[in-house]
Image (tube, one colour):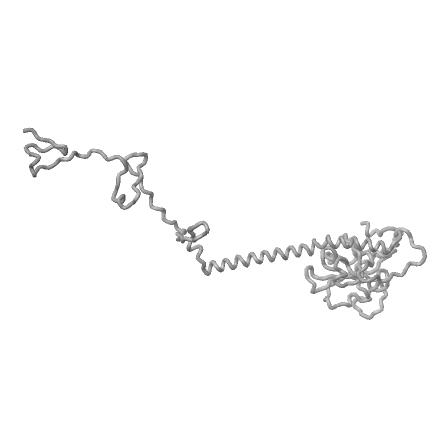
Length: 319
């Protein structure tokens, strides 16, 4: 009798559907179902490996991260809350340590010192070069005042006796001072207070006037606009003083450095207080060294010859 079949499959020969020993035979699976294959991790929510180009073989898992090479170290990350959310930062590099605090202190100290140094340099630059513009402007005003006070034409010889020079009021112009070697000239004012010599050399009030017997003493600041290069004068160099009617040419005979307390250098006879003068001398004083004032630089000169203004400028100023 032929075997009976059911929708569930074919029965073996000699068996009936009612036979309890009958066994259903299922067709064998010969192909893979469509779609990605699932592994044991798929049941736990893991993402299955993605197939490359739809093929049967899954893409290889990423390789193990490289180990740090010699000299390198791995630092941990820690979360830090910001206005934009959390971000990871290097916990070991941001955690303050004694060394990091020391480095921060050194860096801050260095920045402060650099800033202070720049301020000092700017101040020194102003003292050396910046004041020159201001001093030159005041010197132009003093030259105009001096020309107005003297009046007349300096190239015309005066008639009658030469007027005796009188000391002007404090802060007013006294005479012109020229140093040909330094290519410098100034208007000297009366007085040696800080306010008097702020923009011009100042005449010691108790010393002689230009052309008189005694010591015509003049003080000036050690700045580029005035007596900055006074140390370059040597014996034999010329210093020319302009009065109302004459050019007085002095010759340097001594340069020396003294203490601020040695005021006898501006005495009528330098170095000999109380002695009666017999010569017509010129003394220039300024601070020493440059940028300091614990010494005084002194230049002594002696009157060599006098030239009337009506004869023109002296040759010493034409070279």
